[in-house]
Amino acid sequence: MSEDGSGSTAAARAKESGFGYRGKWALVTGASMGIGEGFARALAGRGMNLVLCARSADRLAALARALETEHGVRAAVVAADLAQPGAPARAWEEASRGRGIHLLVNNAGFGLHGRFEELPVDRQAAMVALNCTALLELAHLALGEMRGRGSGGIVNLGSVAAFQPVPMKAVYAATKAFVLSLSQALVEENRGSGVRILCVSPGPTPTGFQAVAGTRVRQGQVGVLRAEEVVDAALAALDAGKTHVAPGLANRLSTVFGRMLPAAVAARIARRVNEQR
Image (tube, rainbow, N blue to C red; front, side, top):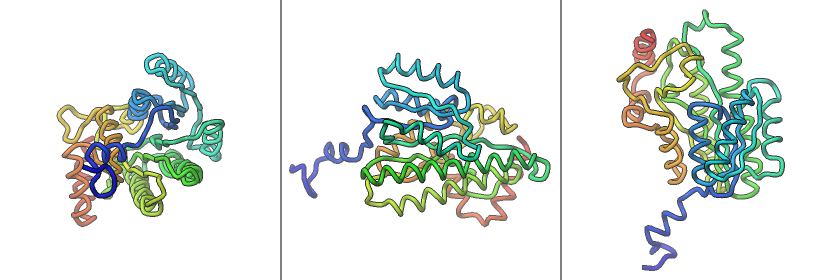
């Protein structure tokens, strides 16, 4: 069978659909733990060089040394609090200096659990700054370079919480709805550009997230996946050219029901679930 045109073989199509990692550079935010660290380890395992970004310089430096030793890749560190004004642009400038960033993993973020009026407003504003503004700014900078090259990818970390209002996590869910909507719009804007945009919507994932948010992942809780499972699903989706993935069957179903149910009904259900956490 011919390998060009409509007669391309399955092997040829698979080769074309793969994203391409080896020897290229990725910037991973929130890389010091959890899903971000999982992305860093998985990408290094695929031969990708890494710029690791988070607030903890010591943790990043230790991870960078480990990845270089274990996988023979290059790893650089950018310590930054991306919630601070101007920090995303400075981090991008440092990360991309002398490097063409082929993949941006917009993973940095945090959540808070509690009644909206009882949570500190400055912490909620910082959540918006990190989950939304920093992600937006980094994506904007990345696209400016990637479109010029005609290649690259952006992975934005959303959440199943994006698909309905979530009382007790009101601002967090709203930030993730922003991430989902922005990602979906960027997919269409960049169709045919050679730049892949992927939004990942995990469910409950045991990481340092729960300690900050004031929640816990209960044993046997529906939809719980390990960080490594989330990352594997995300990279498989990126390779396949998909634009959204909710890892795990239960989480995929929750995104469907979240869209089908009236918002008031979905919010009432979410309140009952989250008041127990």
